[in-house]
Image (cartoon, rainbow, N blue to C red; front, side, top):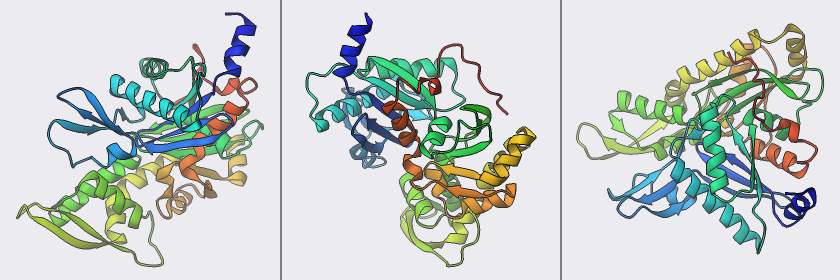
Length: 355
């Protein structure tokens, strides 16, 4: 295709950025901003193979469907676990964007997709293929910590160290960035889903109650914390009594949920410390002045910044809108795609050290 043809396609397409998360998918449209923020859930009729609902409507069905209807999350740990369903979910979101924006007779879009920092080449290819099959003309990938750093407006071009911690639904990623690249990084499977399971396990072991995952997430949001709070919080917890098998309701307090989350949050804080220990001394000196930035939904756990500060002895702050940090970064790159393609992954790129 000639250069003029590429320019013509670009003029008549609306480029899209996608933060394809384990828990939520956000979609940014060039020139319009964030247009979609919905759960990464698809409801399937297993008898017919028909997609019944995607996003918010599908999440409402979790744990409430008959046997032949399954509400599933096609991404696990930030990567594609079910190719076909991921493709259908992406197509739904892309079609919805075009419908809501009133785009008609548009060329297929160029799409930037955020991926975890430690994805394998096979997982990377699965994301590319699913996005292309969902309607994309071209697919670019960007590592989520880099997108988060751009979204948080960190001075990533400077010859100084910046640290971003992106805590999503499936993975938490710690990255040290300097001169527009990732110097060192660490990825671990301690994130929102793991914390939900911690609450479910704690409730089963200590209260003989079985909770659903949605209920555990709601409790985490309501009273979850990393260190002791100045004011006591409580929430009504409803589940099934494991002894009688009947519905049961009790009141739990923030110290209960803090105890449930303690081990995972300590491991997360220790991983941040380990990353800093592997960081070149000159960059550590910069980080001591600039501090550490938290992004992602998991960073909204109360006083998590205080826990990481206790572990690292460095200033820690939560981004102003941590749920959208990654997609805002993708949006900034999307609006300047021709000038900022250096942030996008390309075949044969040398990966930074993983620890």
